[in-house]
Length: 170
Image 1 (cartoon, rainbow, N blue to C red):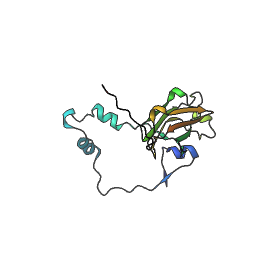
Image 2 (image 1 turned 180 degrees about the horizontal axis):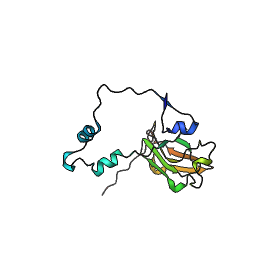
Image 3 (image 1 turned 90 degrees about the vertical axis):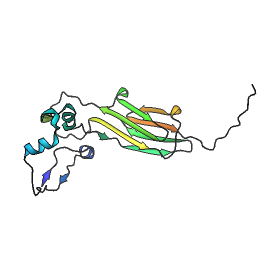
Image 4 (image 1 turned 90 degrees about the horizontal axis):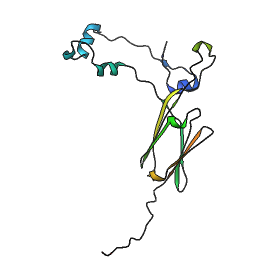
């Protein structure tokens, strides 16, 4: 059996490896020249454009942040572990019905791969988008980090709140 060379976030987190099914050959394979000619536009003379070169580059794999989301009578609370992440490397975007947390955890580069016995921690970019079960007041949201635990308090919109509006006479 063959093993994937790249590990996904879960595999990095747990130290496991995912096995993939053996690949079957297609009935008819096109020669490399024919494939490259069919994929490249004629206007560039067979050379890849900058957009194609960018598309061909493998995007950096982004880890998915684990979260706890729960509610109290007045707010929705999102908790996640961000140990080792500097506050300036965190980005939290909130809309009335969704929250996105992005960040980057940087690894010390002074240790070579040969010197590791076990390497299970996740290093690099991560993000998580959560659809909220209820609309929230984005202006009153608050984020607190303590000992690596990020806690975001999102006050719920009280749809039943009423007020009397006075009419002004001009």
